[in-house]
Length: 246
Image (tube, rainbow, N blue to C red):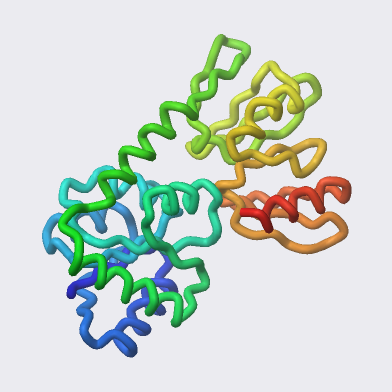
């Protein structure tokens, strides 16, 4: 069987390649891609049996890449740092994933499952995943009152929100910042039902983009855009309890 590895981090690509070479001699890694567009081109050209796919990549996420593929008849194993939104979508469609840093035994088990599925089924579950993601996009539209009018955003377009008096600043994945004429509490009443968490009196974060939690008095989280955001002492346990549940 042929394998394509798609991950924006060279170290991750190298580790996956070495593990497959050493422990899966029956597999042939035919390409290692650093971004979604290269991944699409490679998949369309070579029609691999298995794709190891990172989710959080700059420019084009792994989900966006799958949606853009016209050839989808392959098994996909997602590789990701924990991401509530992504894992929910993957589990909903009975697809497989392994968490970073990649554990050898977890990788080999995922490969074995992929080989078994490849031999037994004649349809691609990726189509169902893409349909599910599109449905989620439609239900996750948020109308926000700005000084100019209403701004319509998808949940995944928001990194985090910051309180500014009676207003709230939205920090977006396109690098822009929007000032919304609602308090952070009012914003939280809507977004906390959509995968956001109030971790500080001044911050509401999109859990999809939490990359790391650093322990401390309250601690802090590092977001996907590199922003360090403090966790208040009175929010810490609630935040950690939530992480444990997911």
